[in-house]
Length: 393
Ligand code: GLU
Image (tube, rainbow, N blue to C red; front, side):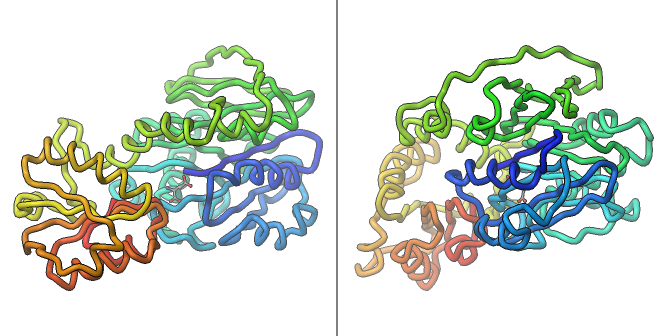
């Protein structure tokens, strides 16, 4: 999950959006994009893989993209490789609906099939394009306007999302919807901002609205109005942000480490909730580990380096307790140079933040050479370890 920004007012949107994305850069991302529009003119979309500087170069820092209303995004790929095609914004083929999204649409496959049956075609591998086209489908089918189309979509979508949406028929407005992914609105004088995190807003305003779970917002330059998932208007208080920019990046915590420690429950929940079914049962088959394969595992060997190794040392006790089979932890750098007594029915779990840790990658290859089943836990989709492991979380 990465960054979202939005602006509607009298100023040029693109430079403000680029600056906002820059302030969310500390979160890491693999591609970026903007959609900007002047009045009721055409919505222009520009995207680039890689750093924000690649996007900035395409639009001369924002100067060549004219318009006073727009949305921007930095992507941390979860569905589909990092590429310009998969970068946001995504749009309906007629550009009636253009949106950016943070989060994961869990039932994207089922929704994609439904939309395909209704004539929709897809041009990216993302779950986001499915959400965008679902909103377009409901907007066209029921003609009830943006809030109606969003609320119908929210009832169908399972998963997490912060969505910022432009509707071609509703110029000078941005719509937002959220569930389990952060999104806030900043109120300025004659201008309104949208962001996934406080640092993107602080240069412009300290007065913010927090959009609640399963709520919808409509922004124009005079402010914002809010709706529940049934499309009924709701009231929201303005909150004054006291933090300075540096504290805001750390979400009010004194150190990044404290922030990350406090984010652990959410990180674990985000990673696992796609595999926990509604009845509470667990099904890893979507990750490539079905019931039969899981039952065949007699022991587990966890392999990692550095702080990922320490995570494994802790996780080893939890796993052993839950699974009732022996679990051990090995340093990847030792693993690859030792004569290993691995069993064929041993599951080798490789943990790496980047998915590129050289020793961990070598250990994974060694485990595969020895005929063991492998599972990777990484933070980067499309990384080498993610690609080579049998299963990946
Ligand atoms: N799931 C979406 C994608 O893979 C959004 C990822 C994000 O939150 O940046 O494009």
